[in-house]
Length: 135
Image (cartoon, rainbow, N blue to C red):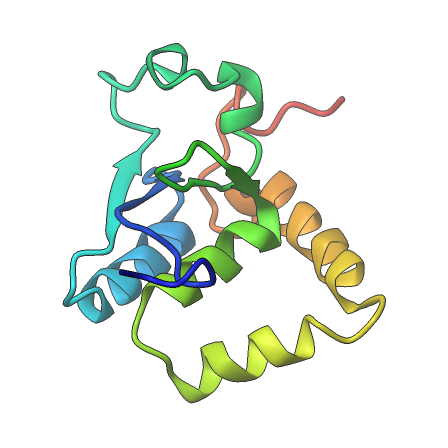
């Protein structure tokens, strides 16, 4: 019987396949997911319907989401932490998980993540009138 500290799988990860950097990172993680602990869901596909997953259609396009089988939803940097937990440990993932435990570092990482997420199409040269609106 798994202990209560062991995550259950598969973890659902909702990512933006229209973002080249996001797709490249997901491809890297997919190669590492030899135990098939992650169900990757590309929100950029025309058939994707956030409501079918009980998710907010506007929010899902803003930041990465990960959901555990018990329904717990993680977003932004905490979604990455769940990905790192689901994959075989690497020096990078282990180091990041340790660093993000330092008081104040997780909120700071969240600020940088939100800046990236908000500007990911500009940073990758994929702006469209809808993806790069100035609000």
